Image (cartoon, rainbow, N blue to C red; front, side, top):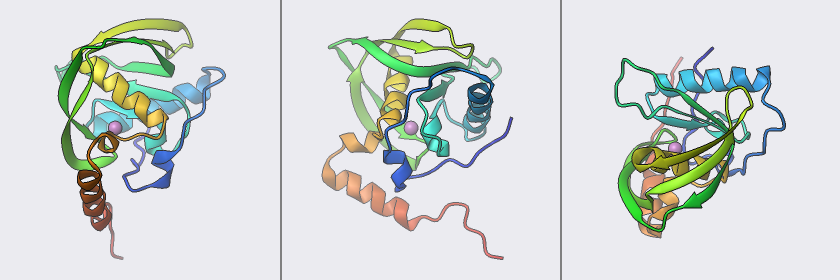
Length: 172
Ligand code: NI
């Protein structure tokens, strides 16, 4: 298991549509382990494979509030089957959009079908924070970031700010 570098906006890779996984095998499980390590180290509550530069439809999450109890979730090829018309608003951030936050409105319930860590089919009904997190992460698989829901002006201001910030800059 290892911690990978998280790509940040603006980066063309983050805009790529990720590809479906044909079979959940050892390679995919290794990737999920690395993603989870990377997410916990960040720290964050969700990460999509494309955020470490791998265009596969894989998400890891842990929305447990208790830091001592880890409840990792692995979602491969997640598809939203059903969502509520009722909306909820959370102030969202994203590991690929560092230090930027905005209120985003999304359906407050969604049902998602996916393959788990072992490749077994699962169907999950999610509410609240988990529902928002799932929708945010599935957006990543389509090359969508939460800032895309903001006004053009707000979005361009954030991208401009991020472009000026050099992460992991070293002088040797
Ligand atoms: Ni994100």
